[in-house]
Image: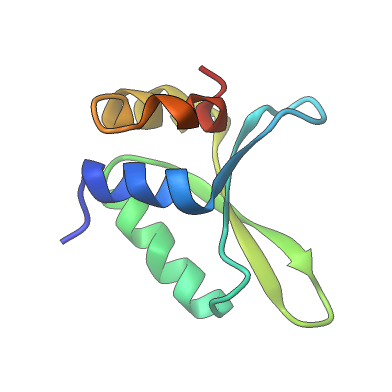
Length: 94
């Protein structure tokens, strides 16, 4: 079962805050899994009311990252804040 705790650990492990460009949001490095598996992960996020998109990381090798929608960032922070380690606050730009 995927929960807020699972999300917190996933972000602490594979997430990073993208502060470049105009959209400041969280990306989850998912290059080691297939596009289809990324879509499954996105469906789990939807169950937590988190919107996301896939960002192409490598077209040649068909690799993607999950990008949390800017409109869902407050939701993500609310869900994971009680479970995140203080050393990983930068991944949410807190």
